[in-house]
Image 1 (cartoon, rainbow, N blue to C red):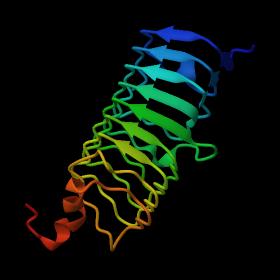
Image 2 (image 1 turned 120 degrees about the horizontal axis):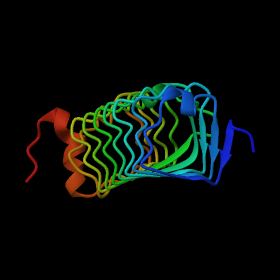
Image 3 (image 1 turned 90 degrees about the horizontal axis):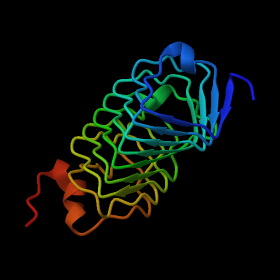
Length: 190
């Protein structure tokens, strides 16, 4: 193992800086209560890693690779995912705060968002095919020219999605969620 390839290591309570993380590959590592908010992610890859209660608040995650990354109770407020490495991009979020995050133009097919706050998230031109939004708050989330075919919104709430501006073939919604598809028409649903 070299200094640039870290495998199966546990990190707890670490505040990472640029020198500790840049140009490194982390594989099957766990990160608990770590702070990544001040890092430069040039050349960084996280492969099959698990993050729990970590802080990515407004982190500049340009060019980072997430391949099989799982995030539990992490803070991603204001993070722009649009410049991450799209090759084999695979993530899962549970109980995370993603308010004001940006996924603009990304392909996040099959991603699971479970019990997440996604307030004012930018999903413009994002490929959301097969994405599961399980009990997520999507208040003011922006869906324009998104592909949400087979996406599952059945348990999520506060969304407003224009079916004329997005692809929603076989997307799933609850009966209560239909209101979010009719917002632009200012129809009152009781």
